[in-house]
Amino acid sequence: MTFKAFDVVIPLGDGSRYDNTELKYCLRSLEKHVMFIKDVFIVGEKPHWIKDVYHLPAIDKVDNKKFSENIFRKVLTACQNKTVSDDFLYVHDDHYLLSNYAIEKFTNYHRGKISMELYPRNPWQQIQMNNTVRQLKNADAFDFDIHCPMLINKHNFTLMASQMPDYNVWPEYGFGIKSLYGNQFCKEGHFINDLK
Image (cartoon, rainbow, N blue to C red; front, side, top):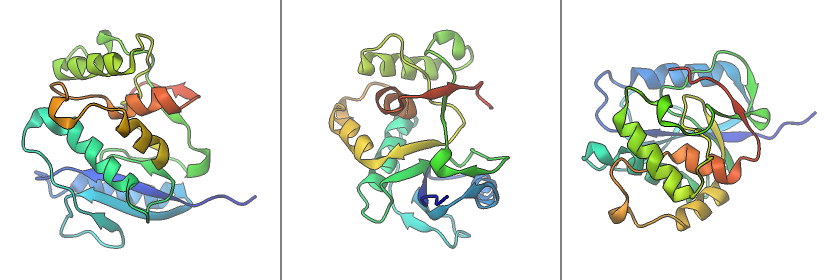
């Protein structure tokens, strides 16, 4: 059986307090457990110690309430780059894989329907997910914004981006990026408890 090779895209914020140590563990887990990675793209800040990956520069907005927009812009930057594979694994620096995966067989996970009971300690996340439900116009939407990588098709993500409001009118705390994508393009998502 022949497997297709995919790229990995990791959006990275500015100003890590710990010299991007989380990213080191993330990259090590990808190298150890993910089969058929073509290339890794870091979008955003470029850590001084990084090597053997591609870097796509992107600048964060300073306002902490814009972090969702920062992530969205970085994923869109990757989607607009012709070098990035049409399908890629979208990973955050705090995602660590603990067993072997072939990206082609990767499953997109959610933690059930969006419900405010899922975020008892995170009022900002309640706001963000309410914004997401309103944008989707779907009260039965699933929450894909958990600590698991997600398989993204860059043409679908670009289509989704074209249907979003302009950044200057995004609501406070933005949207759940993976939930926007997952509810529109992931026919089958599997339930899992969030791991963090």
